[in-house]
Length: 185
Image 1 (cartoon, rainbow, N blue to C red):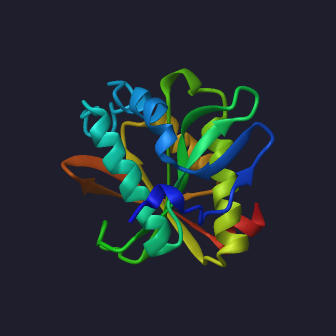
Image 2 (tube, rainbow, N blue to C red; image 1 turned 90 degrees about the vertical axis):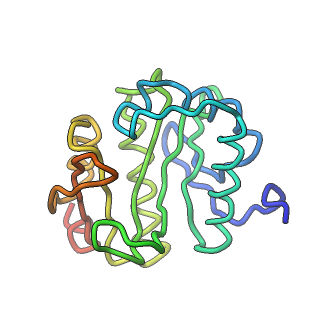
């Protein structure tokens, strides 16, 4: 099956960004981002070593689009039409922190795009899509406890810290945002 031929996901647009399906043509920029040790500092310190790893990730994400109706999206900077990272909802069919069948918000950006508000802007669009288009009741998120900037983004978006937990040997923070709390913002 050729996942690259399928365009099943909606595109989202913000003031500065376009969020769309991750496609095989994103491979080079995706690789450049994920081979950076700083990008993987709070992700197990295992930057990718080959483009084949990225091709496998892209295939996995595209499979999620088909199987779960959702997956992480490429984040494209409008002004330059450049892949700057990914953001989006992932449906967990395996247990994570004693939860299963949940939607998780995640994001990752190339280092040169950090500190520009892109994570908040892209995540907000994904949250709105989750609550308004997918009719979700709640969205979860997690981050390494040491990743203070990611924690700030989640809190700015209205996520509530629930607890600390062990994720692959690292202390992580578990967050939840309910639709009721989102509507109050």
